[in-house]
Length: 142
Image (cartoon, rainbow, N blue to C red; front, side, top):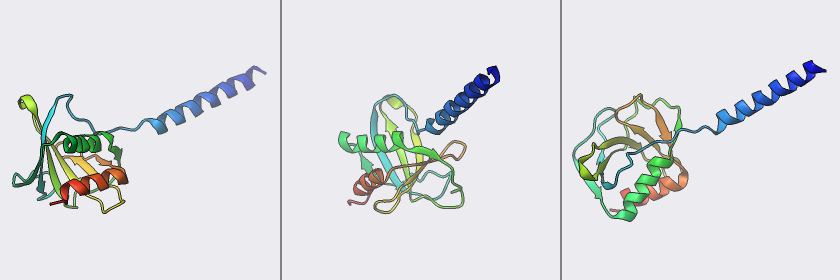
């Protein structure tokens, strides 16, 4: 009888552990500081931040779209070191805080996009299809 209870408790504990692991998603982060603007350049490749900016986004509504895209992107495994990103995104903060440099592989309409910190371990993060559509509207509207 006691052995049955122990097995039941272990099974329940294992189930709780598995469910907990599946819901533990890691998102991208930004500093808890006010974002001044988002600068975007065509990318020259992973590890290189192109300073030839073709688009600066500084209106608060559009900046919030980018902030949300970054903060809601979920870590996912992919090997993109050989693939050239579409864009380099530079998140500029007020008060002179360091710039967040992010590579962006912009998905087609209704597809996910991929984000990756320029400095880091090479982890990639996936956006939702809605986020991709919002980013496409901002970046490709000109």
